[in-house]
Length: 118
Image 1 (cartoon, rainbow, N blue to C red):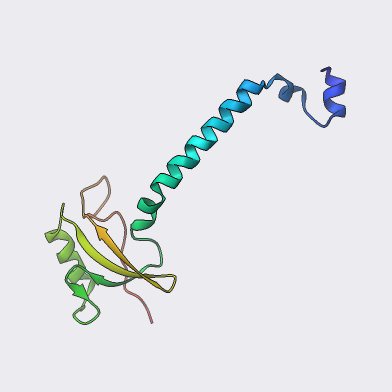
Image 2 (cartoon, one colour):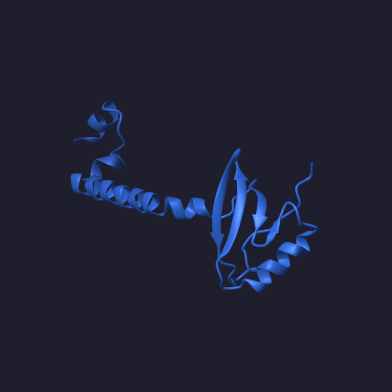
C-alpha cells in the first residue's frame, strides 16, 4: 500500500509495517495477561483494601479494642502465622487470612491501619 493509499484509508504509514503475525502475538499476550489476572483475582481481592473497616483482627474485636497498639501487639506475636481478620467492605462482611511477614518497608502488614473517625 502506498503512503497516499494508507492516508486515504485512515491509517498511518508506520502501521503498514505491522504483520498479521504481530497482531496474533499481541492477542496471545493479551489473553495470557487476562488469564493471569483472572487466576490471581481472588488472591488480589483477599488482602486488606483501602476503606476496609476492620471489625476483628485476631483476638482483637470491637468489644475489647482499646487502641491500635492492641493490633500492633497481635501482629508482632503472629509474625509468619496466619491471622484471621474480619472486615466490612462495601457493606459486606469478609473473612480474611493474613500472614504478617517482614518485607522491604516498615511493619509486617505492608499497610497502615488507622482508627475510624465517626
